[in-house]
Length: 296
Length: 190
Image 1: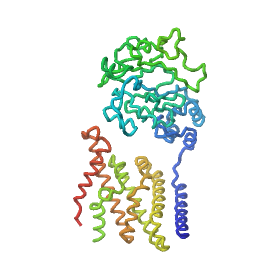
Image 2: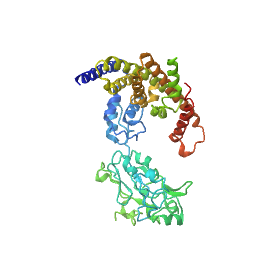
Image 3: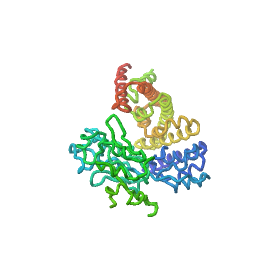
Image 4: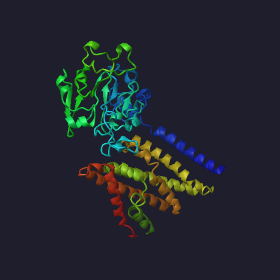
């Protein structure tokens, strides 16, 4: 018994010594700044920067000239620290992004297609006739987004739709990639108007599917002063889509939509002071969406 | 003659991947193009020959001497892990292109059942040192052969009209089982 322990210990010791010597002799020269940048990064390995994990980004920033504000969850704090390590000026301010859901298909608004008894995974359920919801394009509600979120920022609510916690969401985009219906989108937090529907059918068919579905009537398109909302055509049909670069969150489409499928939200960014939170557009008196706004 | 039978048998008749089903992970993971498949095969060859030899030496001169044969599994794993770490450091320094292309599959050679499997089989069959070397060389050559064949087929598959549901790993599994069936044709040759 004691011999076994001694033999294994000796073997381990010899191999360890060999490896220690080898690691010195076969060492590869790395820039010490790579390790410094790596220690400053959050370490979540979420991949939102587009590089393979935090180590990949650290290497890219030091050796390949990646932008120092590439880390999405790190935000300005990390960007400033990386700038200090790299000896550069701090990066320009970036607007925080969060996930937004393009569906309001609760089982009050639509109805179930069948009772699903299976593994609680949206990817599996979607293979069965497009999911347990009557709407083929809508949220499946089994929580694949919740499972993959590395920041615990999205949870399935009581009405079976995911709810994004904007204080925790960093906009990494993993939930959006995972959603099989592609109804999660990463949007700057200061954008307040969102089309909460992905239904590609038109007219009566869309109306019968869900009470708050987009029926592709085009009223929002006609009324938008910026031309920011359009009907996006696809093989399946069309749905209203907002171009967030043009959208000014004026809320006119929210008021005009006959189906109430466009929503005006006031997301709370916990890092902004009360004064800096997104303002009511031109005061409530001038707001086009006053009649449908939840704040009144 | 027996040596030739051993080598031929290990490469074709009981091919380590297609007949003995050891080392499937890199078989499916590193077989996307012939270059990296060949590189992987050579790395496995290097690790397998070296580890089989050292493991055999450890077993014969250390474990048997102290009646500790039952420790062979853990002692072999220790040896193989250290060896693969060494190989990783060596590749990172001297052949960085290969190191990058193999990625995570290089340290996975450590947990590759093929390496440990051959080391243990050598002991089980009571081979002497020459036969151990031959067995390790032949099996790793068979591994390289299977990998390169699969890589060649996969390169062709990229341009074939594969149904959407089968794209990626599903069709590769079909190919792998077809290859396995094809190699059954070698049985009884020796």
